[in-house]
Image 1 (cartoon, rainbow, N blue to C red):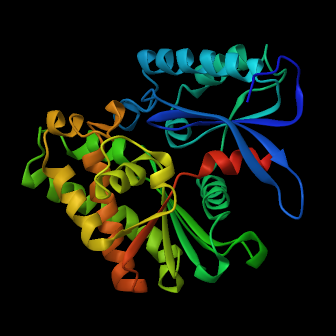
Image 2 (image 1 turned 45 degrees about the vertical axis):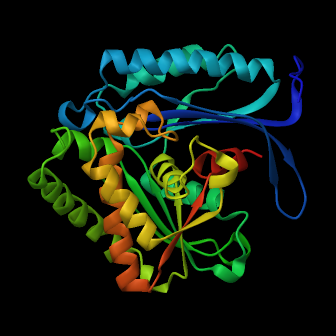
Amino acid sequence: MNPDQDVVANRVGAIDCGTNSIRLLIADVSQGPAARLHDVHREMRIVRLGQGVDATGQFAPEALARTRAALVDYAALLQRFGVGKVRMVATSATRDASNKDVFFAMTAEVLGPVVPGAVAEVITGEEEAELSFTGAVGELDSAAAPFVVVDLGGGSTEVVLGSDSAGGGVQASFSADIGCVRLTERCLHSDPPTAAEVAAAREVVRERLGEALRVVPVDQAKTWVGVAGTFTTIAALAQRLTIYDPDAIHLSRVSFDDLLAVCDQLIGMTRKQRAALGPMHEGRVDVIGGGAIVVQELASALGQRAGIGELVVSEHDILDGIALSIA
């Protein structure tokens, strides 16, 4: 689609600023019984905004600078494509940072001239879970419900149980205070991680996921849906893709045998070995081992509690949920 300098009435922009990445979706909205999104532009940058937040409780100046550089580019794209409405949300790292006012001032300065009044908002873990669920299940057959959607981020992992929006939406959700960046910084210091480090990481994950599983009755789920970069990268590797192909990954299914095997490989690899994998984004190289540990523990819990034996991977997630929330 050719960019348009004029504002397009039904065009929205969504920005998801997480612990590891900042992502942009520009989409046209078609109205009907249910709003549908048609992608105009979708982009992701690894900025590691949450660098060191788990240890220091503050954003690092260099992390804010990386995030600002990406956001400047995104603001130019919003203007170029004539976006009329924008929503930017920030999640786990921003909830935890004591100097978040500096982040808010930066986002207002960058986005304000493009869309007056636009500024980032920090959403709760509960709202993050609901937006992720909305984005993830829109294309799934309601006969496969209830769904348990897991959004595995850099700083937190959202576990959500529900059906499609027509069947009642979200039934229960929990935002667990663990993600691939937080777990790596806390436990996985060697390259590759030692057996003791991996064991310690598993204990942390089990403790954090245990809280989620006490709140969310995953035993009722029929289908497990995974969203965000750890899941999509694992799906690409399970398919033995030589490059990252979102069309091949979206709504693909990964058996637990393949899932656990890929996770074992990622956990045991050096960073150099991970970097050589075709579908691997350079910004995930150092943290995807931590993500793989979370995935394995989730697979174990969902297999035991719900009898689930495969993972469905969606390229649509909180970013789509954000766009739909302002459609």
